[in-house]
Length: 260
Length: 127
Ligand SMILES: [Zn+2]
Image 1: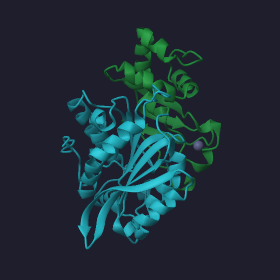
Image 2 (image 1 turned 180 degrees about the vertical axis):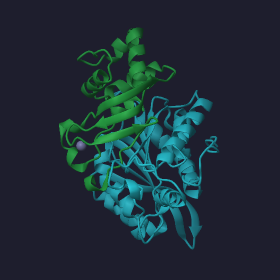
Image 3 (image 1 turned 90 degrees about the vertical axis):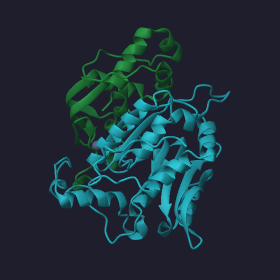
């Protein structure tokens, strides 16, 4: 078992506290099968002896526990330390928390760590240059809810979005952003899935966590419908209830593309 | 926020994606700081092929650094030239933009950078 990053500094009144879903991502990404997939997927080949450093993007890192884990243990998980990691979260406090968690974990595991770039505030991957993500990890707001919380605090919605809001309402809005998924718990995930062909590089691999109510089989079918070569498989699951996996991790990638 | 990060970010407005003017974003009133980061030559060599060099030249000049060569160095150039390696390391990984704005050359939207965190959330009229 690889050590779990320390998140004791994270303000859980406004940033999602690591839970079963976060730990399922850690377990899945460090499983023997995923480690071996990722290592061979990004390793040098005779045709391409020096592949460009992969960019690992986590969308909605929250406390930063998963991104810090991937950063700190890059050598073990990807077979290389020459990776860049980046987080994008709608919650500014989550950005600060992610940066602290990633810096702490990579200092502690300097011998195996990749390079953490930054955590920036944004909506999914809309601010990322096209086809830049080589690994994308998403633990979405997947709980079915009546409504989606606003991406911006009410006062800032008409302006640039950096207005400072505070108080209990603001804290609950920030926490709701981390779990409230709207219809089928899929309103936010649907947007990310639709953007995958534009966000992932040709060699890109995405890991998306889904719950049973998200209709994971339909999501996988949709990805396969992107075109020839697109793959979507369940590579991790937890919480079996009455024969249903409560949570699962779906890996999305294009077959036959490795290296560059 | 690191200069290398800027090389991966663009305007979040949908209608700007197709325009060449939306990348790179242009720093304005940038307050810079230098962070000590341990140099990793292998990482720099592997990062080089995925940098948009033309965009990096623009960013570097706009931040007040000396002009970068027109062509990116090769892996061989980098591994044999310690000074160039160190300069690139300082520019890409040690230089931090702490405060200021990032401006889209296409729609003119200004993204705020505060305490090193850039904010790409759009006001509702731009979503
Ligand atoms: Zn724009």
